[in-house]
Image 1 (tube, one colour):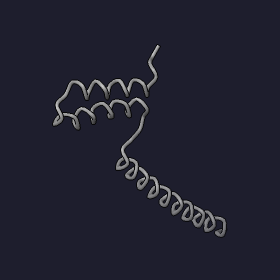
Image 2 (cartoon, one colour):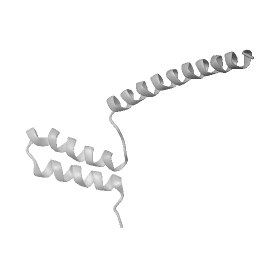
Image 3 (cartoon, helix red, strand yellow):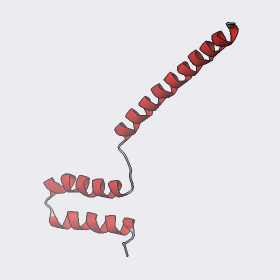
Length: 80
């Protein structure tokens, strides 16, 4: 049985603080938190914003193509 993720995070943080000198604390904290966040499929804000921008561009392109297809279909119906 897996321990509660929050309890596991607290234990790992406590271990990092006990075992490392002050100058290594930031590095250890990043490693601990990175592993914790990976387990929950969380992404960095920067990565999220990049994906959001790509999706917005794709949605705009899809709308543009839908308009063009509708115009071509209208032209095809108008021709005998």
